Image (tube, rainbow, N blue to C red; front, side, top):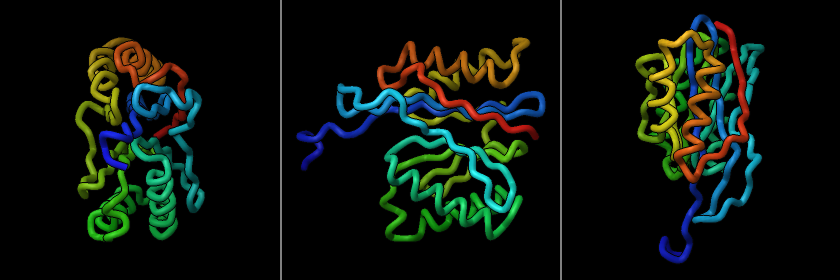
Length: 185
């Protein structure tokens, strides 16, 4: 099918907020095909426990591609227990150089409570400024909202929830059905 005959999957807003020793990753539940909502309760934020070390991951993009990347990340974390940055860099290198992985269309936000990282298929492992990371169709809306809320007397979860609500109010590919995972530093 061509791009014009198949509108493609859209959707997802994922945000990670780090504040006062806690990191929260929140994601909406909407999956859309063109202008149609296919599912409103998808779970795009997961807790992984490779080698007994908790990592929270949220994904935007193709679900099958994201699950492939999460499995690869989990394997990298099992090979390097407790070393999220090293595992993320190894995943990004594989993603960039492996011909199969290069075709995957997804992005990840990952945290172990200490680091908050964005991993992309371009080979990027980014530690965002201002302790906020956001990806997906409503990511910029959520990012802007969270940046505005960081100086208020709110904890990380409240900021993430409020930012996601603002994104859901603006972005038609984002809903207010949230999955939220928190992890302590």
